[in-house]
Amino acid sequence: MNDLTQGSISKHLLKLASFIAVTMTFQTLYYLVDLYFVARLGEASVAGVSLCGNLAIAVLALTQMLSVGTASLIAQAAGRKDQPAAQLLFNQSFVLSLLVGSLVLALGFALRVPYLRTLSSDPATIREGGAYLLWFAPALSLQFAFVAMGAALRGTGIAKPSMIVQMITVVLNCVLAPVLIAGWGTGKPMGAEGAGLATLIAIAAGVVALTVYFIRLETFVSFERALWKPNFAVWRKVLNLGVPSGGEFLIMALSMATIYWIIRDFGPTAQAGYGIGSRVMQAIFLPVMAISFAVAPLAAQNFGARLGDRVRGTLRSAALMGTALMATVTLLCQISPGSLIRIFSTDPAVVSAGADYLRTIAWTFVSGGLVFTFSGMFQALGNTWPALGSSFARFFLFALPAVFLARAPGFQLTHLWYLSIATSVAHATVSYFLLRLEMNRKLETLSCYPEGA
Image (cartoon, rainbow, N blue to C red; front, top):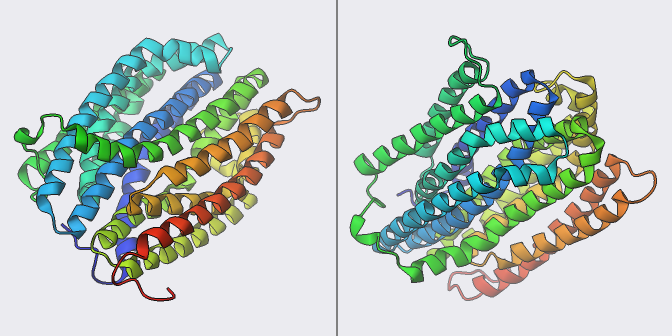
C-alpha cells in the first residue's frame, strides 16, 4: 500500500495521475488503433465502428459503477489502516464484476443489431458495425475483471502494475490489428471483424497478466476464495457509491446517442466526422480525467484518516492543474483541429465535419475538466449522488432543446455544438456549488479541520 496521508499533495497527485494517464491513454488506444486501420476500409466501416464506440462508453459507465465504489471504499479503509475491510471489498467487487461482465456479454450478442439499426439508417454502416461487435462485445465484457483489479490497486495508492499491463496489451493490439483487419502476412483480411478480434485477444491477455500479478505479488489485497460468497451488504456499499458515477457516464453515452440520432439523416459522412471528432475529444480529456481519478483515492485516504485540510488541498491542486491543461488544449484546437482528424481519415468531407466539431466543442474543455475533478471529490467523500443529479440536469438542458432545434428550419450541426458549450458551463457551475455543500457538511466533523480553511 502507498500511504497518501503524508507528504506533498501535489506530488502524490502528479505521481498517481501520471500512471493513471498512461493507463487510460493505452486503454483508449484499443479503440483508436481499431479506428485507424478500419478507416482504410471506407466511411461505412468508420461510421459502423464509431457507433460501437458509443456502446463502449456505456460499458465504461457500468465498469465505473464497480471501480469507483471499489477504489474509494478501499482507499478509505487504507486510510484507516483496516486491511481486512479492504480485502473483503476487493473480493466482493471482483465477484460482482464477473457477474456484470457475463450479463453484458449476453446483452451484447442479443441486442447488437437492433442497437445499430436505431442509430443508423445506412445498411453498410449497420453491417460493418455488426461485424465489429461480434468480437468487440466479448472484449467489453472482459473489461470488468480488469477494471475491478485495477480499481483495487488504485485504492491502495498503486497504479504502476495496471499501467504496465495496459501498455503490453495495447502493443499486442497494434500488432494484431493490421494482421487481422488487412490480412498482413495471412492473406485473409477480416475487415472490421478483425479489429474486434484483435481487441478481444489483447484484453484477454491483459486480464491474465493482472491476475498473475495479484496471485504472486500483491499483499494488501488479494484473491481469497473464502470471501467470494456473495455479501449483499458489501455490494450495496459499492453500488451506492458507484452507481451514480456510472450513471454520469451513461448520461454521456445517452447524450452521444442523442446526437447520432439527430444527425443520422445527414448521412455516414457526418456520422464519421462526428465519430472521429468525439473520439479525439475523449483522448484530449485523458489527462484531466487521470487527475480526477487520482483525486478520488488521494482525497479518500485522507478523508478516512480524518485529515480535512488535506482533502481541501487535494481539490485546490487538482482544479488548478486541470484548468491549466484544458485551457492550453482549447487554444491548440483553435489552431489546427483538422490535423487531428486527418490522422484517422483523409476524406475531405469527413475531415471538415470533424474539424468543425472539434474547433467548437473545445470551448467546453475547461468546464468539462472541472466537472471530472468535482466528481472525483464526491467519490472520495462517499456521496456521488449530487454529481449524478447535476449530470441529469445537464442532459435535459441539452437533449430537449437539441431535439427542438433539429426540427427547426435551417438547422445546422454547429447549433448542437453551441448548445453543448452553454450546458457544459451550467453543469460545472451546479457541480461546484453542490460540492461546496457536501464538503462543508462532511469536513466540519473532522477533528483536524482548520478554522477558516
